[in-house]
Image 1 (spheres, rainbow over the protein chains, first blue to last red):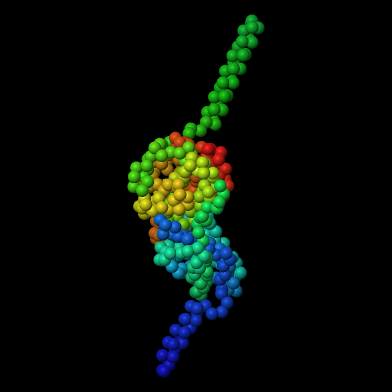
Image 2: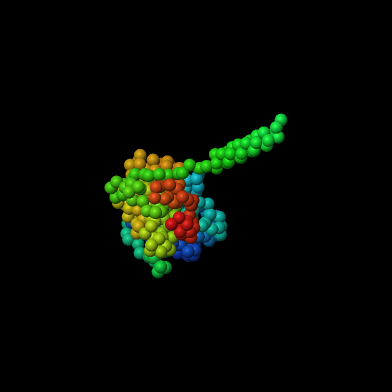
Amino acid sequence: MNLAKTLIALSISCGAAAHAQSGPPSLKINDGYIFQPLKGSNATAGYGILKNVSGKDAALTVVSAEGFGAVELHETVPVDGLMKMRRIENFHLGKDASFELKPGGNHVMLFDPTKDFKEGDTVHVNFKLDDKSVAVPFQVRLRNKPAKAQR
Amino acid sequence: MIPGFTVKALAISFVAAAFCSLGLIWYLTYEPPVGGDFSLTYRGNEWRLSQNAKELNILYFGYTKCPDVCPLTLSHAGQAFHGLTEDEAKRVHLLFLSVDRDNDVPEDVANYAAHFFPSFLGLSGTREQIDKTIAMYHASYIIEKDEKSHLGYSIAHTDRLFFLNNNGVVQATISNPRSSEEIIKTIKEHL
Ligand SMILES: [Cu+2]
């Protein structure tokens, strides 16, 4: 094996290692969940509390999610009495700081599901802290729990 | 001056003043009724409130690709309906009107709304029908192009439940509903 080939092999294995995220995760989530996509809509949202545990300030971006065509970070803000959704291209997340995603506020917006999701499924959403990739698990929840026997 | 005349004059001016101030109070506090009959479509068929009204009709404006606010409000409403008795649930329904004329297929709107509670009706309409209904309830929406987003647009809209009587007149509203309790309470108050 010549030097060039060795270098290529090395860089590929490094890339693979980075992708597999060996070492402690740099981004954690508390109570991460995604609502099961509804029939009639191509969009759904994910919530939870993200925490930067990378040890340094970083810019948070969202890259992809398994089983969805596209994913974005959004905020919902009231503007002149209307509820308006805006894309957040990157979010400055300080060292050890948290970013809360909750209904009616910030959310991960997921588009065009490419498969069916069941309650309890885990969806890995791929984020980046600066240029470091990190996959974060979200549990699929049902929008409306079937009616409880209340009558 | 005759004393009797003075008393009479005083009494007349007093009564006149009272009527004037009552009129003024009425004028200052009177709010004309908001709402009325409206025409839309359901799964492609004509749908008119006056022909389909229940005792109580809850109206909400949104769009199916709204992933956050609309489903949040609709799921609180759905939960509220699950908390009604069978008889109460028969006398009220929710009307979800999609303002996304260009992207929401009527079938999708209907299926989407029914997901939150079986009797929820997902309505569509021509742009004119939608705008007329929106204006009638003093609501609004703005379709904004958003090239940075995958969807390519987003719709800012009123997040409010309108409780209508069978003539479509507003009895109550709840803005940004964030619990099912206040919805149940308002339904029961108006049934
Ligand atoms: Cu969004």
